[in-house]
Amino acid sequence: MSTSPGPERPYGYAVVANVRREIPYGPGGAELRSGTKHFPAGGKVWLAPPCWDLGFGEALAVGRHRGSPRLAGVVTRVVHLENFRVRAVYSPDLCRRLETYPGTGLWSAREDAEAQAAGWSTGKDLYRTAGRDHSGPSAGASG
Image (cartoon, rainbow, N blue to C red; front, side, top):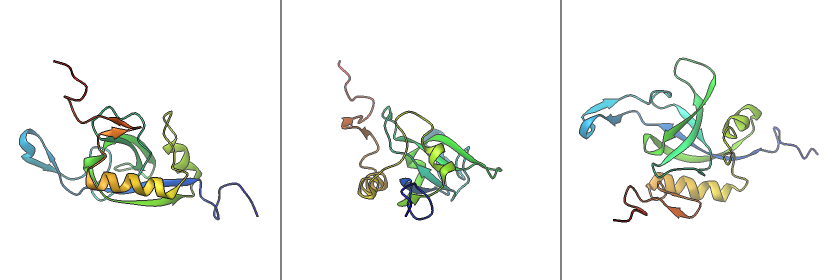
C-alpha cells in the first residue's frame, strides 16, 4: 500500500462551488451579468482556505477559465458563488494551483472544510479569517 497521494488517497480537501448564473452589477445592482469575468455561469470552482482576506469576502478560486480548457487561479468574491460543498482533491495539477499563494492550499481534515463551506453558504464567515473579525469598513476604525 502506497502512502503518497494518488487514486486511493487524496492530497486533501477543498470547498467546491458553482458560479452564480446571474450576478447584480452596477449602481444598485441594476444590471445582471452572467457569471464573472473569468468563470462562466454555473462553472465549477475549487476554493482554497481563506488566509489573507482583507475583509471583502474573497478567496482563491481555481476552475476552467472562460473560453479555455486550462485551469485558472483567480481571487474572486465568495458572494458570486453558490452551492458550496466539500470534495477530495486527487489531481496534482489542481493541488498545485490551489497552493499558488503562500498560506493557501488544501484542508487536511474534511470537517474543517465542511465548517468553512457552511460559513460561506450562510454568509456568516465572509468577513472572518484566522480568528480576526473584518466586519466591514468600520471594523477597527477609530474616530
